Amino acid sequence: MTAKAPLRLALTSALALATGLPAAAQELNALIWCDHADPALLEPFEAAHGVKVNVKEYEGTAAGLAILDQSQPGDWDVMVIDGVDVGRAVDLGLLAPLPADQLPTADFFPALVMPENNSRDGVTYAVTEKFGYNTIAYDKSKVDPADMADMAMLTSGKYDGRIAIYDYYLPVLGLVGLSQGVATADLGAEALAGLKDPLMKLKAASKLVGDVVSSQTALATGEVDVLVGGGEWLTAVLAAENPNLDWTIPAQGGLRWSQSIAVLAGSTQPDLALEFVKYITGPEGQARLATSSCYWGMPANAKAGDVLTPEQKAVLRWDEQPDFIARSQLYPVPDAALDTAMQDLWTEMLQN
Image (tube, one colour):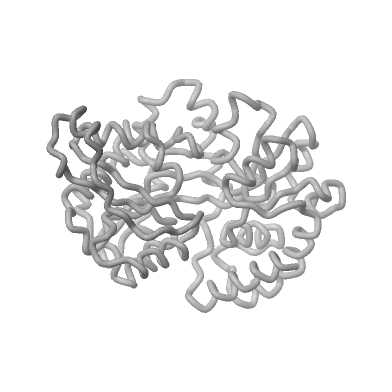
C-alpha cells in the first residue's frame, strides 16, 4: 500500500455535532494493518472516548519501520506489528512499556500470551491481539482436498498455473522450509541457501504473487485455485458468498502468525493510547477485530467467544484451535543479516 506522510486530520464539524465535543477534540494516530481500519471496530472506541482515530495502513514490518523513520517523534501513538518483530522494535527504542497489570492477558488462550515476543527483561512492550495461520488455502470445488495435505503436490505439475503466492517473505519462506523438513526455529543462513531451488520451483508453478487484496481476489474470482500462505484470514471473510473456499494445515505443518499492538515511545497521549490497546484486547474489541471486513482471524482473548455468534465461531473453526496450535510453528525470527538474505532471496524469486 502506498505510504503517505502522516497526517493529523481535524475533526469534522459533523463529528463535533454528533458527539457534542468541541472541534479541538483529541485524535489518536495509529499505524495499523487493514483489519483495524474497519469503522465497525473504530467507531465504538471513538464514541466512548470522544476521539477520532486516524489510521494509516501498512504491510510488512519493514514498511512500518520505514514510516516511523520518516516521521517525527509523537506523530504516531499506536502501532500494530508482527508478534515476532516486537523485539526488533524494542531494540530500536520505538515502543513504550505497558502496565502488564492493566492488560487482560489472564483471559487469553495460554499459548497467545507470548511473553517471549511481547516482553523484554520482564517489561511488557506489546500485547497479542489476533492470530491465525499461513498455510494452504484453496477452492475445494476445483482441487482435490487430499492433495492439499501434502505440500509436495504444489510442485508436482498437477496445479501449474493455478497457484498464487502470498507476497510476504517470512511466512512463505517458513512454509517452504517446512516442506523441506526445516523447522522455523532452525531456519538460519545455511538452511536458507537450501530453500532457493524449491522456492523457484514453486514460483515456476505459480500464476502470480500478490498482496492480501490481490491474492484474496484471485482465489475468490477463480483466477487461481490455490494460495500458498493463505488461511482463515483470507477465506473466512468470504465464507458466506463462496463456501467452497477452504484451508488446511498440511502434513508438513503450517505457520502461526500473531499480531501485537503497542504504544509508541514519544506518543503525546500515552494514556489514550493505552485505552485503545485495552479496548482492542478486550472481549468486545476482540470480537470486532476477529471479524473485520478486511480479514478474519482468531482473537487472542478467549472471552471474545462470549461475544461472537455461533456462526462466526464456526467459520473461525473455534473448537479446532487446540489441534491447529499444536500442528503449527511460529514465524522465523531472523537477525538483521538473515532478514536481509531472506529479502534478497525473495526479490530474486519475484524477478525470476
